[in-house]
Every structure is written in C-alpha cells, then in structure tokens.
Length: 637
Image (cartoon, rainbow, N blue to C red; front, top):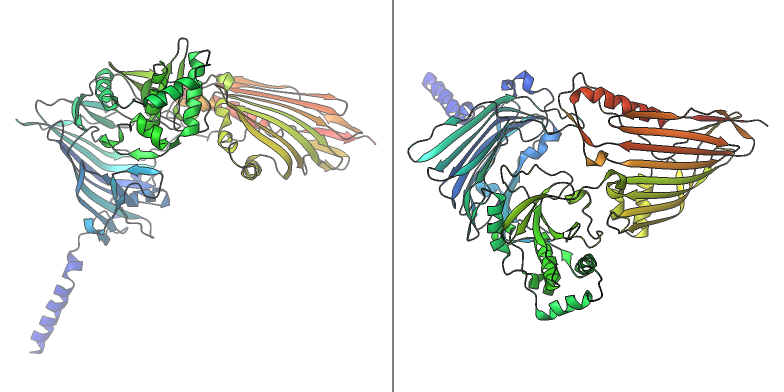
C-alpha cells in the first residue's frame, strides 16, 4: 500500500507541475547569433506581416513580431498602440513577455489593453480611438511578442514593408506577404532588396512574399546620407476612400481625386467677403494684399489638430473657420485660400511633410508621405508659401519646417509635384559684433550685438516671443560663456521675407582672461567656437551629406580694450583654412591697447564621396584648434 501511495503522490506532483514542465521556451537570447549583437540595442527575432486586399475598398492586415530588448535605448518597442475608427477594426491583439531564458513572464489578451479616445487631453479633435499597452520589464535582456489583426472598410494607404525599421536594431527574420485579386492593379516599389520575391500566385490572386534574414544592426555614421536598406513600398492604383473613388497612378490623377475633397469648401458669406475686400482696398500690389490677408488670418485664428472627416484629409469649410476662429493645417490653409479667392487672387491647397527632414517623394512612384498642409500663392515673378498654422511666423517664410522639399499642389485639373523654396547660404547668417573692456584682474564688461538670420535663427525665433523673464532664463542656459551676469538685454524678431532675430546684451564676465604674474592670457574667440569633430572611423561606409543646416556663414568682430601698461608678447599669425567643405579665416590686429579679432567661417552643403571623410575631419580639427588660439600680453610696469 505504501508503494501505491508513493506512486500516487509522484503522479500528483507531476500533474500539478505539468503546465510549468510543458510551458514553451521561446526566444531565449542564447539563440541570437553573436554577430547580430554587435552595435545592437535590440534584435528583431521575427516579424511576419500579411497584407491582403479583397478589393480596392477592403483589406486585412495580420502581423506578429517579437523583439529582444537589450537595453533601455530600445524600450519603446515594449509598448504598442494602434489606432482604430469606423473604417479600421482591430479584431485581435495580444502580447507576451519573456525573460532572457525564454520563460513566459506575462501575457495580455485584448481585454487587458487600454482603450481611449485618440485625442487625449491635447488640442486635438477627432473620432479615432487608440488601443495600447506595454510589457516593460526591469531585467535586461527580455523579449516581447505582439500579434494583431486589423480589417479595413476603406483603403487609401497600404502597408509597406520596412524590415530594418531603425538603427541599432538587428534582424533575424522578417517577411511580408502581399495578396490581391487578379484584375486589380497594385503598384510595388522595391528598394535594395537582397532576395528576390517569391511568386505564389494562384488562379484567383497574386501572392508575393518577401523575406530578409540575419541583417546586422546599422551603426549610423555621422553626417551620412540615407542607408541603402531593404524596403518595399506598396501603393494603390485605383482606390476608394471617404465615398470617393480615385486613381493614385500619377500625381495628376491623385489631384483630381483630392480636388473632389476640396470642392465647395472655399465659400464665405457675402459679409465676410466684403470685409476682406475692404481690408485690401488700399493695397498697391497683389503681394501686399496677400500679406494683409495672411496677417489677418494670424490675428483671427488659432491652430487645433483635427482628425475628422475622410480620415483627416478633408478640411472643414472656410465658413466654419470664419465663424469659430480655429482649425487644423488643412482648414486654416483652405480658409486663407477662400479669403484670397474673394479678392481675385489664385492660390493652391498644398500637401507636404512638415519637419526638419522630409522623406523622399518622386514622380516615378506617387505615394502620400505627407503630414501637413500649407498654401501656395503663385505671383508673377515669385511663389509665396504660407504657413497658416502659426500666429507668429513671418509672411512668406517657411523656415526649416517645410523648406527645400517636394510638395504636392492641388489644382482643379490635377496635382503637381513641386519643390519648395530654398534659403540661400548668404541668408543663413550669424553676425556678432562685440566690444569688451578688460580690467587688470582679467574680468570684463561686454556689449554684444548679435544677428541670426534664416536657418541660423534656430530656437531664438520662438524665444523672442516669450515673456522677458523666460528670454533671460534661456540666454543664461544657452550663451556659451562661463561666469557671466546679464546687466540688460533686448531680443526681437524682424519679420521680413527672410526674418532675423536680433539679440543685444550688456554683460559682466568673471575671468574673461587669466592672469599669471605680469602676464595676461586671452582667448580672443569669446563666443563662436567650433567644438565638434566627426568621429574617427576605421573605414567610412557611406557618402557624406552636409545638409541645408550646414550651408551657413558666421561672422564675428570682437574689439578688446586692455588695461593700460599691457603690451603684446605673443600674437598669432593670420589663420586660413580652406577645403571643398568650407572656408575659415581669422585675423587679429593690435593697436596699442586695442585688440580686434575677426573670424569668418563658411560651410558648403552637398553630397561628398566617402573617401573625403578624413579631409572633412582635418578641416574641422583645424577650425577647433584655431578657435582655441591664445594671445599673451605682459605688464611692462
């Protein structure tokens, strides 16, 4: 009997622990090839996407991906959020967390996810919702797996395949399966694909499968052009969206569809039109009329993000904005268009990508990569671009947000791909004039007159609109001088077509020069110092790109008044450095107790061969060294 009891006990213990014994081990870190850990913050273990089109209106998406998160820099991947609406349904969403050994720690079903309006607490109006959750874990490395399925009642953008979605992320395996009916045309744009797609088409459907595996993490080289990573862009020819059928084969045909979204939305009341005409009655030119109307728009309206009506593509009526005084980029641009129309000036609704850097858009493969709308106003000898969401931007100025990129202007007979304005180098100017009075202890009082123009304005254009105390705080945090005190300052912006921000300061500086015995040591470059040199590389792999923010001119003139009885002991020779990347020149003159330091630096934007990388490093190293130049004075008494 005792043997039977022991037998029953053993069987019971086995059954009790059976779930743990049989629990599947998934994604242990030991299975990651060593070469995929180099330079990686994460490893995409598997990423499977299936995109199925049933018609030009309907489709489904199934995706499963698992990523091993090696450190905090890749923690964003531990979270997921998906938008849904009346045309997007999420039928399934799951998540599972695994430790480094592949043991399951936690799992989520759809009921465990948070669900809320996509508007949150922001200045955003919309009817979309978002479902979201995270599987953050406090022990690295760990792995998260997410699965979800979506269905679409209308389709405008298709799911693309981007097997290497970011830098420092290795990929073990990624696949994409595209299915669509025969008789339906889908446009496909392959970029840098290493393995040819598999064709598994049958009698009813085209079926294509792309696969990539064992891709090492991309270590992004500084000043690099876009990496040549595999990517497949999928886009419709015919599509149906928001009750309108369209054709995305060309920008012209796309514009015909988009123009249907705009029809009838540029109407204003007769009272408003009369008011607008009265405002511009004394204007001498059309450009002056446009400026008056633009500044009226800025004074009357405010920006609110709106995601209502045909997926956020269709603007509210101009009459709505006129009455309510608010709108999103589309609504405000359309309102400006309507006001210009009221005074007989033609303008075009324009879609564009707003941001520091824009994705590539071409005529060869029309695809919407836009997130913003502005207004294009053709003049006889110029084109004016209006940023309608800003209450403070200068008339006709795009700045770094929408300048120098492709945009699509919507005309009655279709759309046209155009390039927005480019700010010339001579307008990207930083000019500083400084007068410094030194005392015998090396302390100084200084007056600074600074001008920042074009892309060199940077954040200063926003700071100039802040209250005085906030401006002062910003100057203390951003003026590259040690141990200084602001006595008084002025900060204002001149809103010309190429605006400029002027900053004048009177400051006291402790230890502006150092004293040792009878000698005074001075670094005459007070403010504009180059301190960055691109990293040293064993082998440069990509072309060098100096983008538009490297197309600038810096000019500094600094006059020092030294204490009496100090005389020059060491004065550096004139310094000149020149390369294909730019020019640098410093000259220093001494006249009794007055020292005049003049510095000029000019950089050239462009794409340069990778073989010239060391030449660039040398040029910038020479500049860094020259900016640290010292002068020595001695007290003869």
